[in-house]
Amino acid sequence: MSEPSFQVLNTPLLTASTELDPGEHLLDLELQGCLVESAVGAHLLNTSAGTGIEVFYWREGDREVDFVLRKGRSVALIEVKSGRLRGGLPGMDAFEKVHGRARRRLLVGEGGIPLEEFLRLPAGEWV
Image (tube, rainbow, N blue to C red; front, side, top):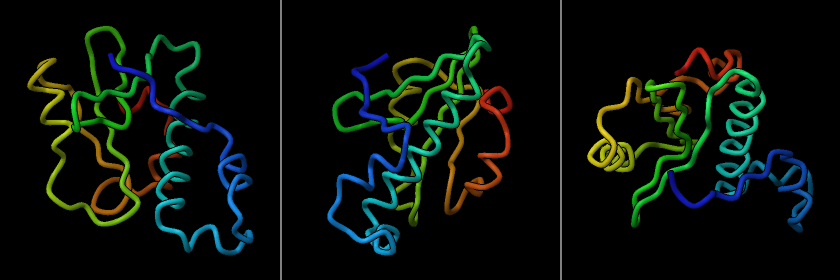
């Protein structure tokens, strides 16, 4: 679908590369966003293994979708937000303009599906 997005599937590797003390990691909002997105990505990849579900990242120009799940002809778009949503979901709109309507459009995090709830269910529940 697009060039790969760099995903760290072991979040301690993300925090090990910083000079922050362990207690300071969640105070860095940019790092917190990376940690949440990586946790969602790891969860999707782990729970989709062997199920026929494909997990992608999509980007065209400055528009992106964090995760695209595809099983057969069924597609789900997932955007992860660790802070307040500003300005809608233009990446999903752009994706659908190019590839057609997705079966599901999901926002994980503030203003959408709570992260804890999303992580309780396998990828197959979302596509």
